[in-house]
Amino acid sequence: MILVENLNKSFGKLHVLKDINLHVKPGEVVVIIGPSGSGKSTLLRCINYLEKPDSGNVYIDGEMIGKREVNGKLVDDSLKNINRLRSQIGMVFQKFNLFPHMTALGNVIEGPITVKKMPKEQAIEKGRYFLKKVGLADKEDSYPSQLSGGQQQRVAIARALAMEPKLMLFDEPTSALDPELVGEVLSVMLDLAKEGMTMVVVTHEMGFAREVADRVIFMNEGRIIEEGTPEQIFLNPQNERTKAFLSKIL
Amino acid sequence: MVGFFSFLVKYLPVLLEGTIMTLQLTVLSITFGTIIGLFVALAKISKSKFLSIPASLYTWVIRGVPLLVQLFFLYFGLPQVGIELSPFSAAVIGLSVCSGAYIAEIIRAGIQSIDKGQLEAAYSLGMSYAQAMRRIIIPQAYRRLIPPMGNEFISMLKNSSLVTTIAMVELMRTATHISSSTFRPLESFVAAGLLYLVLTTIFVLIFGRLERRLTVYE
Ligand SMILES: Nc1ncnc2c1ncn2[C@@H]1O[C@H](COP(=O)(O)OP(=O)(O)O)[C@@H](O)[C@H]1O
Ligand SMILES: [Mg+2]
Image 1 (cartoon, rainbow over the protein chains, first blue to last red):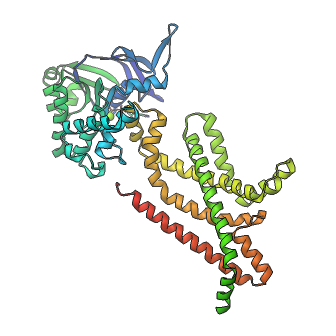
Image 2 (image 1 turned 60 degrees about the horizontal axis):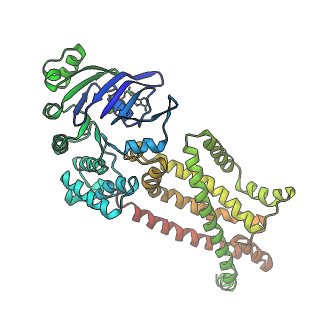
Image 3 (image 1 turned 90 degrees about the vertical axis):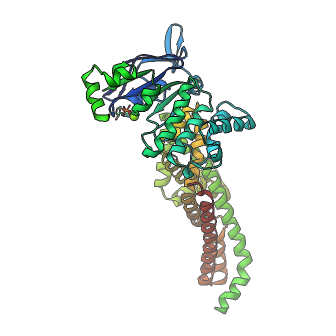
């Protein structure tokens, strides 16, 4: 579903991602952990091409994102194609990034209507379905400012799901939430994972990782240092840095 | 005081004609200025230097040169190279080009005040830059634009009095005419001032109301 090959990314002199290789199979749930600044967000942003990698390739379901082969050479892909691929990748942000001028339902139907050109009636029907799925059927007319953080993040998840993406990327979806609101968001994500959604989740919620992650990846200073099942990483980490990091957060 | 009152009654119809012209000039130049300003603002924040450099040049020159000089350039300067503009055309062009530069800055600041995450959320749904601007960024910026646009409108209303110098007959010039034909400059200009004050007050109220209506969701 996702294939990342020799990905490198720098911001100026700062080499943020160093030779990242990653393969996520359909239906797999991969959790990424690592200290702040280790490049986790940048990796997710390279996967849906919000950030343009300096070198290396990213394939989504076999299609290369951002580049295209012409006469055996790789050239920049058209924006149209990049947008089309992006529309198949759901993304959930730490700060929700809901559209404040639209209601909850308005947020959820925006993608289907504007990007997929879906008729409004149909989009509304679908939007209600996804709001119900995240447990917010009664909030469709509320504006984001009228919702709690946990509710906002669930609307954001519904908004991403309404595009019927092939995979979902989550960038610390619960770290901006008050502790008592974390559970409601995790439980929506848990359901998604159980339904077989392919997910890459940056999170330090160990309970979530243990319950649903097929694989946990530890990143440090732009490299994938260690990966394995949740048990391997959390209970029996091999790398010193992984041990040091886990001892800080567990 | 009684003298002023009868003066006002006598000349009000002519003054109102001038007032209507002033209002027309202001509305026209703000309308064209907004269209110019939107494109210039988008050009200014564009990654393409081909767009952003001319746009920056435009706002730099127009905001840095007095409006009076610009109007004289259009009305007295251009005929020298064979371009003759009527007072009305010169006034509308001059005021529009001028307000366009200020409005471009207002719109640019408005767009850039929107959180970067909004654009990213829009992109992550698969939107193009144009779709993201049209559906997500501009509607949010638009609400923040109301107060500075109100200020711009009012300063344009007052600035429009400068076009009296290029033979455009509006409120200010009407007052000047009355003053010289009646030899009562005090009453003439007090009357003009009052009419400007009425207009600006009306627009302050309108924009204030607009602002309150549009900020419900925040
Ligand atoms: N747009 C950017 N411009 C410059 N530096 C950036 C940018 N985005 C991220 N960085 C830097 O890249 C490094 C990795 O950031 P990030 O991927 O956000 O890490 P993480 O999500 O693991 O905390 C950090 O040092 C950060 O300051
Ligand atoms: Mg991050």
